[in-house]
Amino acid sequence: MKSPYFKEEHELFRQSVRQFMDKEVVPYIDQWENDRKMPRSIWTKLGQMGYLGVSHPEEYGGSEGDFFYSVVFLEELARVGSGGFSAAISVHQYMAVAHIAEAGSEFLKTTYLSPSISGEKIGALAVSEPNAGSNVGGMLTTAKKDGNEFVINGSKTFITNGVYSDFITVAAKTKNGISLIVVDGNSKGLTRTKLDKMGWHCSDTGELAFDEVRVPEKNLIGQEGKGFYYIMESFQLERLVAGIMSVAGAARAMEVTLQYMQERSAFGRPINKFQVLRHRFADLAAEIESAKQFTYHTSWLFSQGASAVKACSMVKLLTSELAKKASDVCLQSYGGYGFMEEYPAARWYRDVRAGTIVGGTSEIMREIIAKMVIDEVSYDSPYKETEKAPLQMTAREIIASIPDRFKAEKANGDQLVFHFDISGANGGQYTVNIAEGKCLLNEGFEGTPNCVVTATDEVYQDVELGRKSPESAIMSGQIQVSDLGAMMQFARLFKRIK
Ligand SMILES: Cc1cc2nc3c(=O)[nH]c(=O)nc-3n(C[C@H](O)[C@H](O)[C@H](O)COP(=O)(O)OP(=O)(O)OC[C@H]3O[C@@H](n4cnc5c(N)ncnc54)[C@H](O)[C@@H]3O)c2cc1C
Image 1: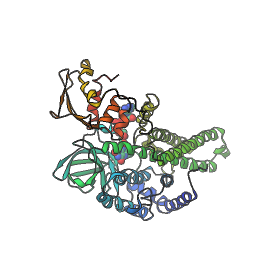
Image 2 (image 1 turned 180 degrees about the vertical axis):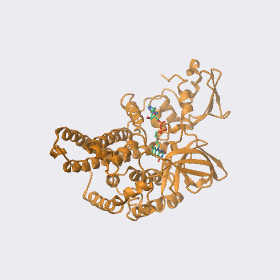
Image 3 (image 1 turned 135 degrees about the vertical axis):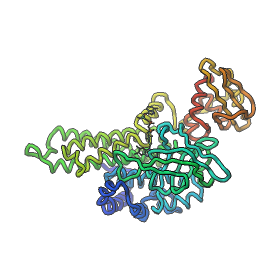
Image 4 (image 1 turned 120 degrees about the vertical axis):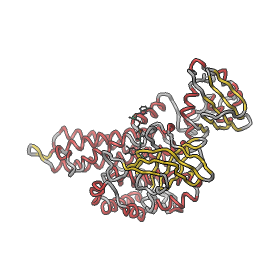
């Protein structure tokens, strides 16, 4: 079906990418799957064609195309029919390198972005940990400052390109929150182990151990302590990218299966004449088409600069679940051949299984969507923030009310020290100390805090008075919270301001 989002130049670009994939990738992909590895040469070939810099700035070698060039590129990647291949390339361009392009310094851009666009360097993004996948805020890896270096300790797991990459964008806890730091693949103290997995065979998925890994301070991406917000923001692109590839992969699987059904006969006629199969594919075609059009609409929203949390989460949920269903329907239509490695259906079936897990599971997508449609939580501010009501309490008055709002009966032996660093005319520095069922408030900073909350007086006031959602303030970086787990524990101990 035609779409108003694609112009002639996008279609020309599609032809060129498809020709490239048909010549340079499709004939070799089975071999790479068997080898459990892609050759370095494919990265440089993709780089020479400009395909690794579709969305990146021209000054670093990218082509800075509008977002629909990326849509085309990702659709053609998925058409190859190897989840491993599309994951490796898309994680490199749209996750590992995207953070550097978005918030990296000139040094990081020349050292890592330019060679990533040319295909000379491969990147990975390491957020997930053995005990913190869905719960990003629960990560334990630390990066402590020592002179002009960070010293990283901890571990990461399930990292795409984790073993063969030249650099890794690592999320780690620093003094005031999570930060993103670029780590060279050959750093001393970094151990990388390849994981054995059910699909995505040609891509490497790694477990990384950091033992006193020293990284220059200049490898920090953007501001220290803002990594959590960068990750939350980039989730929208990551989920949209996953959605575009899921639906394109499902469409391609259907196309190939329909060809097979035309050629395969049973009971004296082609199997595509059996009504039960025809109806099954009519349903699938309708679902794929509607998911595709919704994905294009979300791509347009995203290209307009909207954060589109709701739409991106819906796209990720719908398309990854649909791709799972499509691979099952297609495999069934191949009969016994569907179970054989010689035919493509087995790989489709294996590879789509990761789709409902990576980049946020289907359950997490449903949680986000439910919060938005049921609890009316908004992550899409500043567009939807409510009008400012007349001031009721200043930030200082709100802080002063903390001990009165303390729910001692909920404190169950909790021991927490919170530092509030509120800037502005109505701000100040305060310590809230919870111990033995009591809550004490003092001016200035005392003791070692479990959590530091940093905001302007206006933002703090808006959040406390219910004019701004805490989630959106945190996600946009307007409020910085050094430990989200401690913050949640703290929040349940206080009555809200009426
Ligand atoms: C092939 C592959 C490649 C990957 N690549 C990368 C990568 O490049 N970089 C990276 O950082 N990570 C990567 N990941 C990790 C991936 O993002 C995580 O696996 C994913 O976020 C889930 O985390 P988890 O595995 O720890 O599961 P858990 O968080 O332990 O979840 C286990 C189950 O509990 C459910 N669950 C958890 N919390 C809730 C909740 N609040 N409500 C309802 N259900 C919940 C989950 O949905 C899931 O079903 C990759 C994973 C795979 C499999």
